[in-house]
Structures are given as structure tokens and as C-alpha cells.
Image (cartoon, rainbow, N blue to C red; front, side):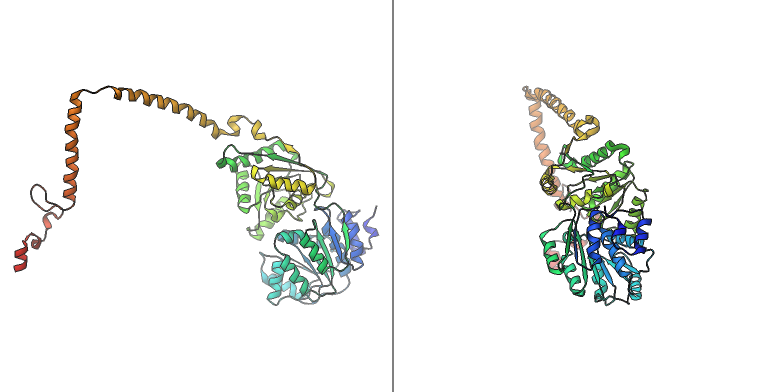
Amino acid sequence: MTKFSELNLNPKVLKAVEEAGYETPTPIQAGAIPPALEGRDVLGIAQTGTGKTASFTLPMITMLARGRARARMPRSLVLCPTRELAAQVAENFDTYAKHVKLTKALLIGGVSFKEQDQLIDKGVDVLIATPGRLLDHFERGKLLLTGVQIMVVDEADRMLDMGFIPDIERIFSLTPFTRQTLFFSATMAPEIERITNTFLSNPARIEVARQATASETIEQGVVLFKSSRRDREASEKRKLLRMLIDAEGDKCTNAIIFCNRKVDVDIVAKSLKKYGYDAAPIHGDLDQSQRTRTLDGFRAGELRFLVASDVAARGLDVPAVSHVFNFDVPSHAEDYVHRIGRTGRAGREGKALMICVPRDERNLDDIEKLVQKEIPRLDNPLNSAPASAAAPEPKAEPAAEEKRPSRSRSRSRSEKPTEKPETEKPQTETAAAEPAREEKPRRERRDRSGGRGSDNKVVGLGDHMPEFIALSFDERRAG
């Protein structure tokens, strides 16, 4: 079995790797590091959680240990789809380059331009950035990419999903043609294949697992859920999530709960906190400092449940996530692989559970086609729960239905006396009263319209009627 000491890495880099507790490289690391050190382009295809980040950081540090950075002209560039992944890559560089004098800058949104400009002006060896913020700095004239020797594209398929491919192509055009390119992706969509054919030169292709496969150490399951009524689907689905969490008991030490929409992330997180679960949301609309605090708390074990959108699905390395719950079936089958890849990392065991409503069954079929196996169906705990606990609202409906016949019977009994013939006297009194009732409204209508009452006074002007109104037409004309 290959060891890191056999990969021709810089001795100072090897020392940092040993201090981090690693001895044996993963398959993607063992396959990608040697050609990268030779200066070849590398195309790495591997499922998430296999150590792709170290497979490009270690050879980069070794190669960049020689040389010096120039102001505004970084020597290497690492592109990441999300802020969290970029920050994680920066942490890896700090870990493995602590015995090597290299400078780095992290360009992500939510951070002051001024602070980032100051780092770039000093000159950096490693520039780690998201595509949008990188182009912002370039367009402001604060950055030149003509000195880039090594360029890395991490999680390329996620870049495709997020619509970054035009930005990636533009960034490629701003870098030297002689650069070395390290390109990593979990899946190879046709668009990704086109980019690699365009911008990579005779790459060493390292594919360590079947495309879009989940780790065998992850136990998977799906609950097919149908609500009792359409307007109760959201609340019953959240109740089902809580029951799934409770059923795992102490085995669920921490978990990431994925939702498709940002608004649902907030709702699910609030619902869990309301019922006493230690949960917090993370998605793209939150302030960067808040996202960082939430992730740090989850990594440190201070937060048990992280409710996330797909912003957290790619590349986040939290080594010991025991469970992943897919509150929603992901719209893209590839996202399922990346979501559940947050658990069962580095050979650990993990568990991934998913809730599927009828409208998402087509997406479930796509996922099973992609991973090439059927996801085991689990019993719905709501069905086995007591009726009063599982669905308290529907229980009231039969009671309401039972009361309706009794009301109809009471009405029928009350209608029976009206069927008896009435005497002549009440009919006469009723007939006499009807004209009186009709006459009164007519008088009231005439009085309200400004007509004269029985005393021939104008109604509506009171005692303050102007004198000229009381005059006859002839008198007014003569006056």
C-alpha cells in the first residue's frame, strides 16, 4: 500500500501531514499527486468525502515552496463554488503549509473588499476564491491573473449546477495558456466533459469510483409519505421528521437536514427549536459571519442539527456526521449523492434517511437510476402512531358528521307543526298587519328624500332654514 512518504512530497509538507495524523493516502490522492507533481494536467473524478482537497493542496504546496509572489499577481488560483468550501480549502492550506512560508488570500462574498485588496497588494502565493468575487476584483483593476502557474477547479459539477460555467470559461481565458490545471468533479456531465476537452491538455484521468455513487458505509432509507389532507402536509411532514430523529435515539449524535428551498430551511429550523431540538439554519441568504458561526458551532459539537440548503451539500468536511436527513427529495439526482456524502466520511459508518411525498416520486426514480440500486423503503412511523397523536385534527371530523344528522332531525321535528292547518283568525291578523308594515317604509323613504311630512314642514333643514327658501317663486322673482 502506498504511503505519503513515497509520493515525493516536500519534507516539510510530509511533516505537516504526519502531525495531522495521516499516514496512508486515499485512492484519489495516490492517483492525483504524482502526475500533479510532474506538472501534468489532472482530471480527478471521485465521490465526495474521498479526500479530493488534499489531492491538490499537497502537490501545490510542494511546487509553490520554490519561488516568490508578486503584488496583485497570485501564483496559483483555486476556484470553489461556495464560500464554505472556499473557507475549508483555506483551512487545509493552513494545516499542510504551516512549515512552509506561503501566503494566501481568501476572496469570498460577505467580506470587506478593502481587507481583501490589502492582501492582494502584498502578493499571495495561493488565491482561493469564488468565481463572482474573483471577477469583481479583476474588473475593479485590483487583480492580475497573468502570473497564475497552477489553476484548480474544485467541485466542477456544482459550478455547473449553480450557473458558474460562463464565469469559469472567462477566468480560464484570463490565465496563461501555459498554466497547469487540476480539475476535480464528482460527476461528469456533458458540459463538464466539454470544458475539460477545451481547457485541459492531455490530462491524467483518475477515476477512483463509479460516477455518482454513494459510499458503501452509508445506510440509506426512504419513507413514502402521504398527508391526511393537503393543507396539513407541511406540519405532518415536520412531525414525521421529528419522529425519524427520535427513532434513531442516541445513535444520532448530530445530523444535517437538507431542504430544497431556503424558506423551508428557516421554517424547519424554527419548528425543531420550538420542540426542543438544538437546531440552526444555514443558507445563501444569511450573513457570512452568521454562516461561519453556525458551521463552527456544528463542527465543535455545540450544535446538534444543521438545517441546510444545498449550499452546504458540497465539500464541507465535518468528519463525524452520524446522520443526514433529506427533508425534501433533491430536484437533481446528483445532489442526493453529495448530500448523503456528508456522512460516512473517511471510512466511518453513516445513515441517510429521506422523506418522499407523492409529487417527488419521479425524482426518487431518477436518484435510484443514478446510484444504480433501489433505496430501501421504511415504514412510516406516523401510520403506527396512536390516532390521537398522529393526526389530532382529522379525529374531530367524524364527530362533526355525527352531529349533522341530529341537527337535521331536530329541524324536521320543528317543521312538523308548520304543516298543520292554521285557524282563520291568525291568517286575518297576518293579512291585516302586512299592509301596515309595507306602508311605514314608504313614508320613511318619502321623508328621507326631502318630501313634506304631515305638518307640511320641510324635513331635513330643521329650524335653520334660510328665509329665501320659504318665499314663493313670484316673491323671489319680484325681489
